[in-house]
Structure formats: C-alpha cells, structure tokens
Image (cartoon, rainbow, N blue to C red; front, side, top):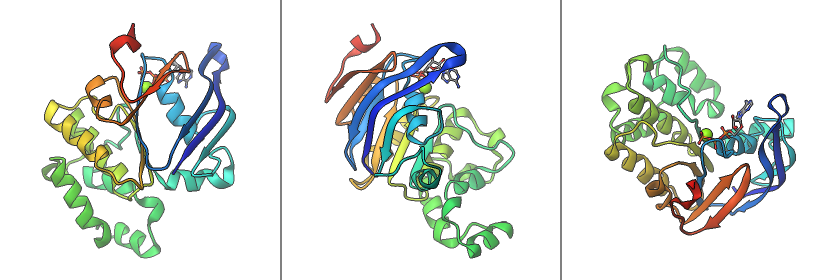
Length: 236
Ligand SMILES: Nc1ncnc2c1ncn2[C@@H]1O[C@H](COP(=O)(O)OP(=O)(O)OP(=O)(O)O)[C@@H](O)[C@H]1O
Ligand SMILES: [Mg+2]
C-alpha cells in the first residue's frame, strides 16, 4: 500500500508540543523504509498517525484510504501488521494465542468456533509454526507471555504482525531487546517481505537502517533526511 501524507501535524496541546510538524511524505507501495531520528523526534507518533490512532491535522492516505475516516480506518488497520515499541502482548495469554490474535480481523465464524474450542485454525497453524521455528520461539509457544524474556516477547510480536499476511508493516524498534542473532533474524524477516508489502521500520540502530534501501530521518517532527544512506550525524 502506498502512503501519502500532506502537511501532517500532530499537536499534544496539553503539553504545548508539536510532535509531527507539517510532514509531507510519499512512500510507494512495496517500498522498504527505515525511519531514524533522535528520541522524541516523532517517529512513533508518525506511525500512530498512519493508523489514525492520534489526533492530527493535514491529510494521510494509506493505500488510498483515509485512516481518519471512521469508515476506512478499519480497512487500513486490517491490512497493517503493527509491531509496537516495547511490545503490547497480553501477559496472561500464551505466546501462541498472542501471536495468533494478530489475524483475528480475518477470522471466519468457523475460525472463531475453533478458537473458542481452544485450538488454532489449521490454515494459520502451519504458518504460525513455521514463523515460530524461524524466530526461535517454537518451544515457548505454550508459555504465558509473562514468563517470556523481553527478546522472546519481541519476537512473538513480530510473528503476530506477520501472520495475517499484511500489505503494510509498521515496526517500531522491532530489534530492541534482541540479541544480535535474533535481531538479525528479525531484520532479515522484514527485509525478505515481498515487494507487495510496504515496510516502515523505526529504529535507532544505524546498521539496521543500512539494510533498507530508503532511509528517512525525523528531527523535531520534521523530515531531516530522505536518502539511500545516512551517518550518525542525525544524532548530533
Ligand atoms: N500521548 C502523548 N501525549 C503527550 N505527548 C506525547 C504523547 N506521545 C508522544 N508524546 C511526545 O511527542 C514527542 C514525540 O514522541 P515519539 O514517541 O513520537 O518520539 P520517538 O521519535 O518515537 O522517540 P523514541 O526514539 O524515544 O521512541 C515526544 O516529545 C513525546 O514526549
Ligand atoms: Mg518511539
């Protein structure tokens, strides 16, 4: 899905803070983009705005749809896999259920009945198993998420985002808390997504950003860089 923002602005009025400041941006369908910028630059807020999840002015179109239109927001979110900064899994549910819940907007009545019987519908079970194996959490699928390490949780969140076969992935620091091997596997998984999937990865890791063909950098809510490479100067 292509992304087009025009003069997108997000104000947190109670803090007299402009987190995203008149951002006009075009990302083509299937582009894989890294989003850099110092802490507080507005990266997470921009990703939230793409889902219509924070009050904003200006315009946003995701795959031609307006996430700020109540009628279209649902379709945007259904087509999007989200990996939130710090993860947002349900601690009391198993890793399997958490990962599987990402596909719930797609479930049929038959799927719901299967889930209510405590099983994973077969059309997801194989894919879930493959993803869990690839990301080293197959052994942990039956454990409640509260018993997993931070890195394992992060990988479950990645699997949850990938499971439904989204057309857009918004990943907010998907490698935070991962050891180098698992971080590389997570980035490999995102980079290997086909050209039919648009990917935006917010990260502080310049090596991760370097894996992406296009690098955007924000500073004070504005676009400070848009190119194929970038150095550490964005943080100075
Ligand atoms: N819900 C909120 N209410 C008020 N201010 C907020 C809210 N969310 C974010 N902010 C502020 O908006 C600014 C941008 O925050 P944001 O989370 O987008 O930054 P970021 O670039 O993702 O930073 P980091 O690299 O630390 O994750 C920050 O100053 C932050 O404190
Ligand atoms: Mg952030």
